[in-house]
Image (cartoon, rainbow, N blue to C red):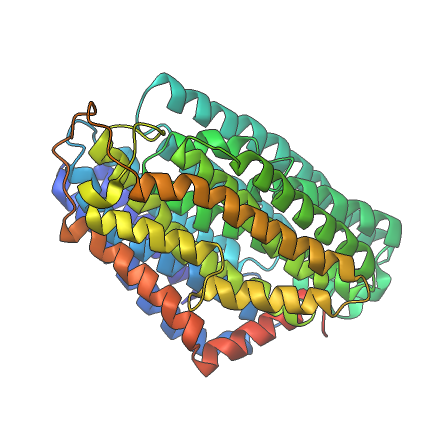
Length: 478
């Protein structure tokens, strides 16, 4: 089943590339997404029975992350055919092929049990998604793609160096077993050379942090998110960043098992708060809707690493927040894309009063804003509240206070733009495009928002158990 999860989307990508039918290529997306999710749910029944010497397989951490990515992909895949129908001037061959390749490579990364294999999978997800950023085929999208590749290449090179340092730390310790995470986090953790292990973590934090978009390594995000269609922005914000977060957590778990968790926690908390502060500053009076969402993504990557750095209950709710952020980002990016299409612009003051022109997308965008800023009963409220509570209970109370202050500042900064976009007066001199909200362009968003609300009210016990076990993996519990 592990290989099936990888092979299914890659074979579908090959079929999409070879077929001549535009409509068939578009329909491959939701069909493959549904089949992948069904197969994953079946495979997750055995996530706690992974052999320790397996190179490929699902444990609690990888299973939870892949479940988040698979659900995100399904929502995006159900939206994509309607979006592609609105862009008949663009051949969807590269779009569908790259979209499906990403799912297959993300499945490889989530199941990889060797740090080298994780690195390879992370790099190939970058290469698979780069053509999606260039979908609009204009100067700005070309610049965004170039920046995405160049900055991402620097990050992935640092991550490779960190992976090599980790291997050298194991070599100096005399570890004879294959360099699998199972051996690195069990008996092998005591053998690792501490200076080289610390250096490995710093490099991988910077490297994979670049792929996540942690400040100040986030500079590719505003351009990439700002110049792509909303459905691609959703995939980047909830999919690619989740892959990078998982890659970072794999190395963090080794550091934790080796007894160096306090060193790693300080770095994670510092990077998290810096990312939230950076996002808050650049959200103030932000006139570009897509760039606003890009800085929101920087903020939420900061929340993820901050929660992991606090540890304990906060780490488990950081993993919960991974799903909460992905679902709501779906709603925000794709509803913003619908609004942008109606106005033929993504900037204030040209985009105002969206609730009058595109009422469904306007309400979805506003509700998505409330959800992502931690308003109950949506899932982000549960994770942010519990992360804050855990931080306030720590000896260093200032971290929890800073976290809450930054959350409040970000809410105020985002609300200034969002309220104008949704409830302002439409500019009378701005011609309305033919776009109208349809069932096909709004139903997937409603489903994602409903799922976020459901998670905020109730989480099935099997998923709660998986998150608890994933938290143990992250914190190096042997």
